[in-house]
Amino acid sequence: MASRGPSLPRITDVAALAGVSTSTASKALNDTGQLRPETRERVRRAAEQLGFTPDSRGRALSSGRSFTVGLITTDSSGRFSIPIMLGAEDALSAGEMALVLCDTRDDPLRESHYLKSLVSRRVDGIIVTGRRTEPRPPIDVPIPVVYAFSASTNPEDTSVMVDDHGGASSTVQHLLALGRRRIAHISGPSTHRSALTRAAATVETAGDALVGEPLHGEWSERWGRHAVDVLLRTAPDVDAISCGSDQIARGVCDRLRELGRAVPEDIAVTGYDNWSVMALASRPPLTTVDLELEQLGRRTAHLLLDAISGTPAPGVHSLPTRLIPRESTLGT
Image (tube, rainbow, N blue to C red; front, side, top):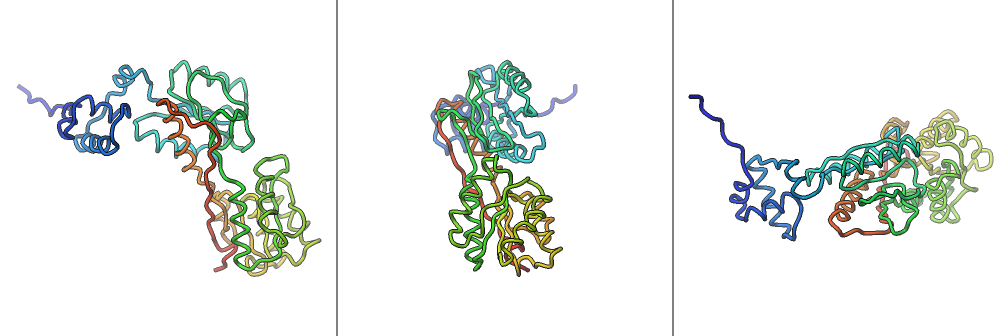
């Protein structure tokens, strides 16, 4: 007679190893009930030690939840939504929850279709995000929703935003601390909220060190190169340029090099976004602002989990950015 392999660990085994009742072990693994954090952690360690994996179908049936979350985005390129998604997955995976990504491609009909599909699949909640920081109309669904990067126009909704004002201010403070006293600002379209916010913060923080008015154009290297020519015609003695994006900053650096202006010896340059494709490939690498989008995704997921559990936190939650100094201001 063939011998039987070892039996799979059961929740009763987890409870015994953790020194708790079976019901307590179940609550700890399902993130339900009122338990002390140390109890939950002890149960999870026991489950990990035994290799215990909860049955998601049984868990869903017993709790009335699907343990899935939808993420609706208008950011087809993934430039902003992918880091947010990764951060959200980090937070959700701790509770063994899955995330379903839906790209609307800026199509309201497609968004409506995805929302109906997610609700019919009984997802526990929805994260809504996009590629711009302009507030967007709220969605109407009978489940918890949290907005990330693009806030809801309804102040009673929960939204998580990047502190763009603080991020832009930090680049100017950095330049001033380095002794720069003729600072110009080149940014994206004046119709974009993020460009206006970053420009306003630059003007406010630079004070008398500001050269001229902020220059607005495309979010592109081409605009960065052209803006340098426009700037130097009226302010040839500029000694620092803060830019509203890494793409613009890379174009600025390229044009300054073509004109024989050394970066940062003659003119220091800062970017914004910490988009590695641009910031690290620039010559020299860019001092820039990291939006901390993965952290934003984690915070958004935690707020959604709180809302799912019945404790929502309405209003706009603003998260700090992080300045990353590199050779475009510090030199080699």
